[in-house]
Length: 87
Image (cartoon, rainbow, N blue to C red; front, side, top):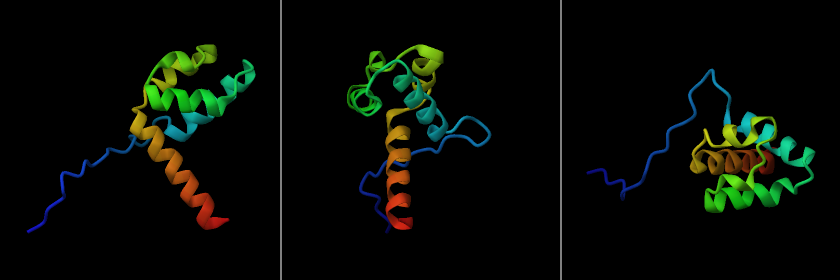
């Protein structure tokens, strides 16, 4: 008997569209361009879901709102692990 212990399976972002990595890179550069600390602002957004942490400059806010916060966390963890494993 296979028991998943109520594990939630996350759906990946569909192929052929902007990836979470693309959106995060764009949002990061927009936050920098407007003089914000991108890390602090992105952490605030991920923790609260409040889109006002993200500037609307160049559509950054509307882009990041297309992503689920779990998609953002998944991308960040994926990048971190790949970076750590590949040095």
